[in-house]
Amino acid sequence: MSLIPLMLDPKEREVLVVGETDAALRRLAQVRRWSARVRHAQNPTPSELAEAALVFVATEDDDRNAALAAHLRARGVPVHVHDRPDLGTVAMPAVVERGDVLVAISTRGSAPVLARRLKEKIDQLMPARLGSLTRLLDGFRDSVRAVLPGFEPRRRFWESIVDGPAGAAALAGNEAKARELVVAALNGRGARHNAGIVHLIGGGPGDPELLTLKAHRVLQDADVILHDELITPAILQRVRQDATRIDVGKRKGRHAMPQAEVNALMVRLARDGKRVARLKGGDPFVFGRGGEELEHLRAAGIDVQVVPGVTAAAGCAASAGFPLTHRDIASTLTLVTGHGKNGEPAADWRALAATGGTLAIYMGLTHAAVIARSLREAGMSADTPVAIIVNGTRDDERVAAGTLGSLPRLAAGEGGKGPALIVIGDVVRLAPAWSEIERLEAAS
Image 1 (cartoon, rainbow, N blue to C red):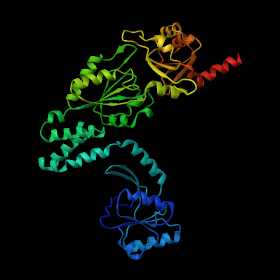
Image 2 (image 1 turned 180 degrees about the vertical axis):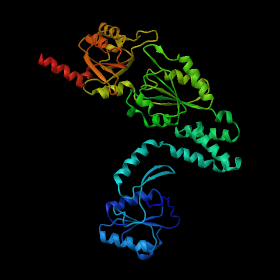
Image 3 (image 1 turned 90 degrees about the vertical axis):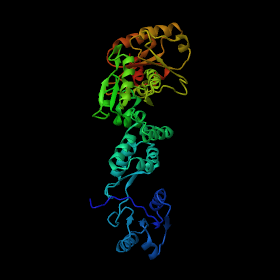
Image 4 (image 1 turned 180 degrees about the horizontal axis):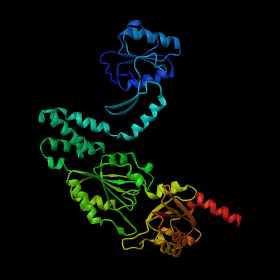
């Protein structure tokens, strides 16, 4: 490619947009975001063209476009011609913006669809508040130059800010906290500045494409990943590859590491200056003990941020093809844990049976018989539709549908095949698995 990538500052010279087409109006609106000295000219004079810093040409007349481009090239004025990269001297890239941060992608006009697709990918990866971080760095440039006169010390300082708690605070929207941390670092109070940070991250129910953009970004920055056993290999492939990974999870009561040890490990790693990602299945605040970990970290004075995830009820029901609420069927949704502190679920079954809405029961497969009996004794009909979703959103997802009366038998057949969610309520009738039951009943 013969292009030289540059960012143009027009200074006191105008940027001209020539033409009356929709393309010209779109370009005018776009360029006005970057420069106040932009003018829309239908018939610019030769002197106006010669004095311009840059000219965009997009008239309806191809011959006129070619003539204008030739005139501008002869006078050394940068020119871009819409849909004719061969006539111009500059290429207009696809741009991703975050405040003062601009990322430009160009295929020199040969593959604009590809450039747009690349822009979409980069747009997903760039933090939404990158402009806040840029403002933070710019606001301290003079102070840092005064305190750290050498280039190498300044570079190391800025790297520690961008990669450390101050940068994380700015990207999280807490600019006051970010400024406080930078000031502390400049004043030599390095202990606080050098402290790490813990992110409590929801990894969703299993499909790596259900990771949020923020979760993906934080996982790429983390030094240490503390993950549950239910985090799928596909999700672990999305984390920073040189990060230390520690399995601290459990499954059906088997603890890889007791919760107290997990809490102590997070504190120790953060105090060592590590960026820690505590990666949990689903959402950390929905039966994920994220609240307990948050309390412990705050009490220890550790910087902690929460990154919500797609909880199992939402992800699994959507993947299984039915809603959790429906205006004509269910106006309430109740999330219930099927595994109490001492084993069997401790729930107000009478209140749950009376909701008339949807029950989503997490970790309930082992105690499915107790759940079914308790709900029936509380007044729920044995004919209430039920679905068990095993390995929801994953490639090996299984959906078993039936009724509350058949729930113990269904659970016995699905036990041991993976994490399961039980959904109880009339919304299950909208699932393809339920339609298959109705088809078989009609044929028998």
